[in-house]
Length: 325
Image (cartoon, rainbow, N blue to C red; front, top):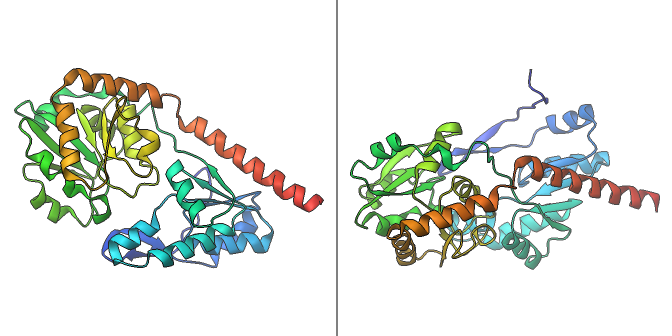
């Protein structure tokens, strides 16, 4: 039996990206809340289903905590070429109805403040440091991925237009480098052409993914729309130096010149040059990797979960104070 009751609702595939499904509003939400009698409703990235959950919580007098975790305005720019202003109106309307909105990074905090979203607090993400660790580096796997002893530069994440993975094309041209791509998505056919010689491993997870992370020499992330960027944190936990854009979540995660290198967003030359710097200097890679690992050691999910409980307690106390007044 599952430790918590799970209520299934219908969903539809996202147009152009069927691997992502959008949950649809359902009458089951209110019934589930009435039956469960929660003290707080936690809304993960509310936009469609979460909005219905927010309304049900309001009708029942239950405080709601919303979590901002997806740059929907950035996605609107990428997939529709317009609609960014409409996306921000929707985000502002939805999150303004919550008792509290939790944001994963300082960049997200600045964005939401600039667009008039009230009652914000920072709540970052944890990382499974028991699973992602440097000791999992696998020489056999490395020989399979880079049979000529190349330096392995890895990317992990969705293969989608907003990730701009094509920026790694210049990295593929570096001598003595093997690019390894982990993940799936609608951009895979185009990327197979744009990244000659790259190895595509498809979607991986669990201990298998942890072993792959630890076997990289450099982790390169290219997406400029990350509200947090969990894969950067998993690479750091694995003792791997990071190259990432100086935008969004990576600004909080990567200490430039100590745990990795930040580069201008969407700049293929900058990505190539940063990777080339790390490829040429094994000692620097080891130094950055060790510093990254030390940086995230205390960011366990248990510690982050305790922070979340603290936010719930603050919301409940504020609601009680209003009622008492």
